[in-house]
Length: 245
Image (cartoon, rainbow, N blue to C red):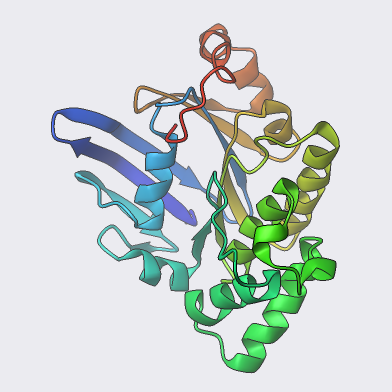
């Protein structure tokens, strides 16, 4: 049984069709990459899976349970967590306090368990030395790592990463890839939206390509990247700054 199964997913905003009959699945321990130009509906797909947006049609099943109508907080406690493309930490709180919020409220861990979880996550994401630094003082890479840490604090079995490598230098990107590989080694399943294609290729088992709200291709990374149709779409991937891609 797949960990996640999405069937016939549709999202409309009036006459605008943003997600068009999307179906996909994710096995336990698998990593799936999502490619597509800005405006292809990728982030909307994450919003639908995470529960921050309700679908117009379709079914979302997680761990054998229909979660289509469950709110985001319930899905988080079941094991679905996500990062956001643009980090928005609580800038007046420390790095530790930001992560503690995820552990205490996202997963409802006891005080002691939440604190232990925070320390573990900060160590795994390379932020332990910044535990007492205000989130507003972190570098971009550190904020990206904090996004990852806050998501991991909820003890997810499914982690949704939304363009977490965007804006990083090559050295920073390689460091982040190593961290994500370490996360995956713990058994966490991952769906990763990313424009930095070489980062995806270093981590994922499969890639799905979206355009105009539809899934137009899916397969092994080498197969997908060799597709002429995908190559045509990819040509414009890094040209747009639309944050809602």
